Length: 346
Image 1: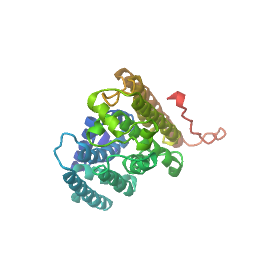
Image 2: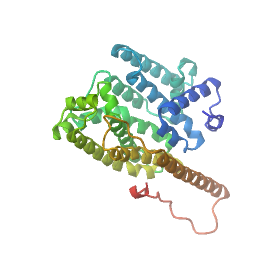
Image 3: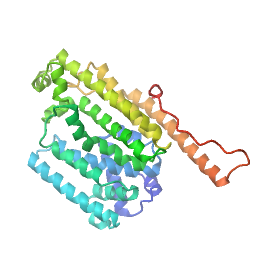
Image 4: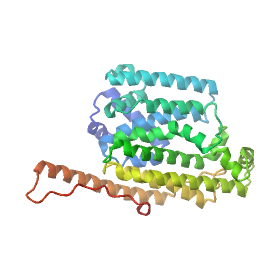
């Protein structure tokens, strides 16, 4: 966390500044796309986003770290300990008694939850899905997978809304924010299908596999041997089409965000949905290699996001200056409208 970001957010207590800085480091190491997009937010909102994603990364590492020799039981106990720390930290955060939250990630998360009034149920729902990863290795249907993703992905979008701000009623923006969280995770599932198989999980629903005449064992065979199967490619192509439909559901929510937050989320939208393009370009070979957005494309999208972010902040400053100056003698301006974000503009 830079001094500028912490100062802008009004975070002055030394231990709390250290906690937020720790969260920023977690995101810089593990979430390149999210970290890049977060740089486009106003500086005072970045620490909160790092706290939210830092917590998610920490819990995810407990469950999914392939380099760890921890048993499922040990991972489960670590999650229980994390939830205990979370409850204590959130209670302490409400009272501004930060001394009880000694773990840096919990300290920063509790402070963010208090500042932005984030409902704690979003955190407990998230941990419930993380616990299921210790015992559940597959899902029968998209409906069943959707219940898991409510806690593992949709709630991340809902946590973010108070930080990003909205120009529409928050309850109208919420379904789109939840859908974007789900869209991002579906992309992760598709990109990482091989790695997830190594962990004993397959997030592609069994009903989707059966519709194309394959089963989990066929996926494991392909992963193990490196051989391709056209039916597996058909499954992956169908999963990508489903994922794109969820992105379309999420898209209207970008225009509902505060103008200064839109460039960040738009950039994440473009880069993450671009992973689907990379997967398609690679011939859906995700069981054998990881598809990535080309560096040049990432740079172009980031530059465009930066231009939009600078313009949004300049517009916000002009609006504040006009408000301070007071109304002019001219006739009043019409109520501002939220410009729609069209898919072709992305």
